[in-house]
Image 1 (cartoon, rainbow over the protein chains, first blue to last red):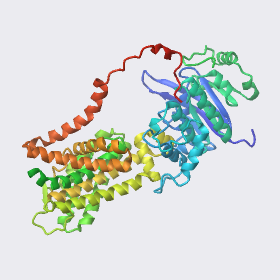
Image 2 (tube, rainbow over the protein chains, first blue to last red; image 1 turned 180 degrees about the vertical axis):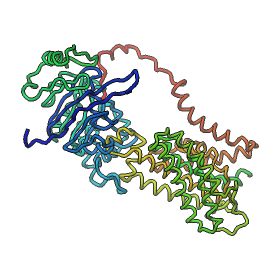
Image 3 (tube, one colour; image 1 turned 90 degrees about the vertical axis):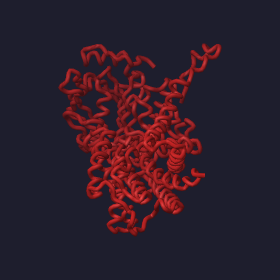
Image 4 (cartoon, rainbow over the protein chains, first blue to last red; image 1 turned 90 degrees about the horizontal axis):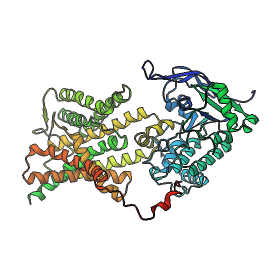
Length: 271
Length: 309
């Protein structure tokens, strides 16, 4: 591993929701995970395995109970959400969550282009920026390149997710977090957004964590696959081993590691 | 004829309340916070301005300091909400209550400070409505231009996104809490500025000034946006619409007074206007829209569908 930067290091991370009540739910239970620069990791796991909790912990949506999170060598464990944002690109499951509906496409992109920089009292969209955004939007191939001044709220869910992806990668993040970002889309749109995702990740060599409920996608995309159960990583395969994996082998690995059958009412076993 | 005579006064007062409504627009429409601080901060603006002018301070400086006082009130509400976790509506009510004591203190324990009898140079006054209208238009235009420039800066855009989608804003590295405080400060600063103009126009500052101001502000916003959004849904046109809404509100107000409505019922009237504007879109959607009848042969569509990219 020499010469390759550690982009993410999670050490012994714990998180229990509703602590001390009858509804207490341990979501992360001593999670350890290391990502090398350029890793494109797909994440699968059953109901309540802690997948989204892990992404929210990295993003700083709330404070973890215990443990340490480092991004590219910087300890971010105590950093508030908006400060960690300079390291992160995020796309949410809900297509409504990643964009400001009452603002123009160009304004949304301009805000994203300044992630991690100090915002000043200068024009929010500089000359030339629109042309640049137009070029990037045309690469999405969704016909958005001529709608820069349109309010994002007028777009479809798939279009909004594609714009959110662009916003997440416009300023190259140290780590891209995709939280089942195609789950709310219809199959055809989901495939399109996934294709855009793969292109952006590969072109920009982005270190990526992608949660998915589609086992087929989990195997087809990325160079590494992790499976979570009860707040921990229980299966971790990469490289050639991952490429050759089949869905039934994957389920077998899970049962061996967790000692229980894989259950998830949302998981799609085939494409 | 009596109505025409009352018109210049209605326009002048409408311009002042339109300015106040612009302040409410920033909290209510841009930040998505129903901020009840304004009932107190408009009075603070009036009190600060009246006390400073009668104390001999130049009128411009007094007006600027009224703005600053209002901005401080907004900051208090913002901090109660963001730093102490108090729900925004309650934070506004708490600050409003605090301001009652503050305003009494500013007025030196009296309930009224009057300009009458003094030889003060004022920006506007009831005795000269033409001048009042000109002053109102100039100040409103200046405020709109400054806000227009501000909300298209890098900082301004993040203020808009803070109200529009706080999740997205945080994910893009925006300090949502700080932005709410800044927005509430600007909002209440403008409201207090309107209070300062109101005191000069009426010739006095009264501890009871501003009771129900939020409702008048909202009425002006709803009246204004119902027209301006149909013309062009952009920021400047919206702000102009809001001022227009304030003027229309005061014309209606003067009209019903001339019709013989007892002034005791004016606050009822303000509230009813707001109820109507809030209720109509809801009633339309909830009770008056019927599902379209299903076309014949609708079964054809069953197999396909799902394409919305």
